[in-house]
Amino acid sequence: MSSLDIQALTAFVAVAETGSFSAAADRLFLTQPAVSKRIALLESQLSTQVFDRIRKRVFLTEAGHALLPRAHLILQSLKDAQQAVSDLGGDISGKLAISFSHHIGLHRLPPYLKRYSSEYPDVNLDINFVDSEDGYEKVLDGTSELAVITLSPDKRADIIATPLWHDPLVFVCSPEHPLHLRDNVTLEELSTMDVIHPGENTYTGKIVNQLFERQGVSLKTSMTTNYLETIKMMVSIGLGWSVLPKTMIGSLEQIHIPDVYIERQLGIIEYRGRQKSNAASAFKALLMKNA
Image (tube, rainbow, N blue to C red; front, top):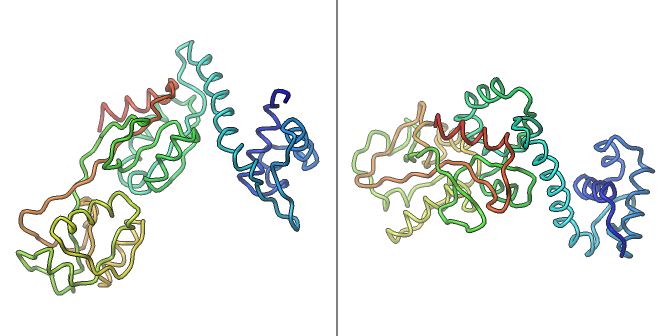
């Protein structure tokens, strides 16, 4: 098998991610025939098809599925090599691909981003807003160099996690809720009432579940969502109680539960096996200095 062509791999990733030859052509500023030619070259080099074309739709073949993560790594390694050479001069420039959780992006990061952009105008920030759990995948597959998210309660050997903020979580309800102004509410009482629960697949949801599991009680979940702003809205109109960061209480009422304290850690993660660019190092240093 001959060496894989980088332009062909780039076209392959674009088609795989967009699901369309025409959309990939738009992304790459090429004509559709040019993209088709590159895919044909790649399939010739691999001696197998990477896409099935069915009724004008494009699907990855088994070989395509196997190739996609490796193509990401190859292209990211090339970008890293180019950035490493550029960084030798000490310049802080180029593209910094970074992921933020929705909550942190809205409530924590705006002043840091403003300062960073002011101090390092030659850096092009490529920002993705993601669920914290997806932030780990973005860092591991190389599409984001850093992610600022809710940290997983479980440590991972392939991830460097740096805590930045303690984020206390509180039980909340609307002013019209039966628990309004009640003292000494128990977890058992809460478990009998409708809860607007952070998604069970989220780190925040897992923290809440673990608290109730330790007490041997289960939750009466009426609905779930990953978005804290949505939870706040649904609690405010009386659809149930929930758990939110203390910084988000606003007009909601805090439910006081004696001797119960829970929090999550917010921080920055990076892939342990990847050398940080100057731009990423500067961003991490800014957060650590001022958080």
